[in-house]
Image 1 (cartoon, rainbow, N blue to C red):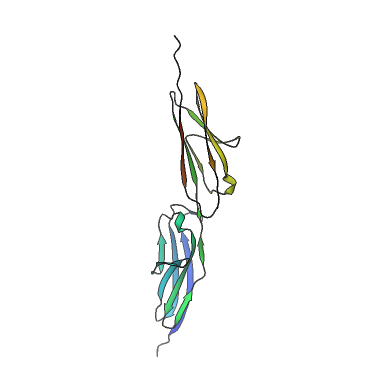
Image 2 (cartoon, rainbow, N blue to C red):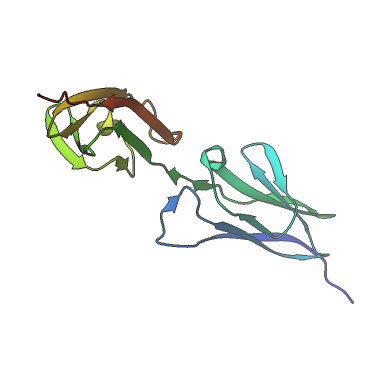
Length: 178
């Protein structure tokens, strides 16, 4: 005598790292099903089919992989959908200030009129709408300084892209006094 039954579903998520999903991380979704006969597993992102194995792995997660995931288990007794698992990838913005000067320039970053950092690269991790605004890089050496500016407008915190902005080159020159 063999008992057959419909499916029971359990979905778990394994994150490599701190628990926050950051661009480039690996994420593993596990759909365990208890059914007889064994169920066929399907994974969906929204309504789009993305996989047919019990384990769905995403290595080097990217912007377009944020969203709602669910698995479906099906055998001859029926099918069942899991609860939705939401993957929210945290993005960052990188601003780059390049200067061509002799002697080399020091770079200082401002948001509005407030100092926010120094160096050629200014990285904003865990981007949010609070980061919207005008960013200026001041490149300076003993011959003077020059500002370059870029405006960052963060429209949606959940569906961001990584931006690499190259701010115009700043060239300093000095005339020789004879």
